[in-house]
Length: 210
Image 1 (cartoon, helix red, strand yellow):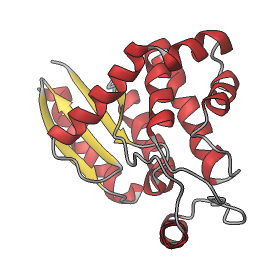
Image 2: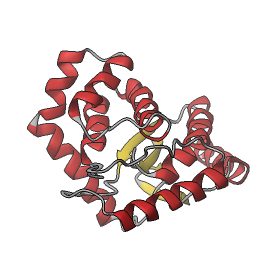
Image 3: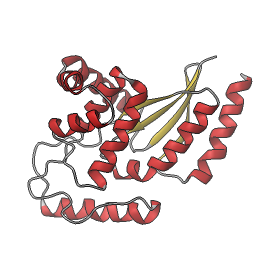
């Protein structure tokens, strides 16, 4: 019997930032039962032009709603400055590079990217910034910088995006439970830990008996 969780998310998705403490608790719960979690990047936004005023206002209102619903901290002052291109592919690709180099350490990089973007206002669309954060997470700077631009990493990132689209996942965060190749949906969208912890507990118990 093989079992694992699949955490489908985007590091620049505000609801994923809101869900971060819940995800961490659920991943730890699964790990205690001997079930690993694989990080899958979804590709929230692909953009080539800077945000316009209306889109920026809409996103910040969305962030405010997430902050109120989840209690996660956001930095609103100077957020999404003029000229900012909201392209999540580089940050997603950084997580894929980290996953290939050291899957366990990739979770540390995820936390740094999310906190850097939402709490500190860092531009995590820029490769040099991502390399800095990877170094903070414990990766070798030169090795990570090379992995970030490798064609295989770009292909693996695109493969994650395609897998998510082919599965019909329309929103993040999404948490899937996989047992012997069969997928079960634990959540599509934010839910509090009190709702998901017993749900995951029942699935883990069934997996252990299978």
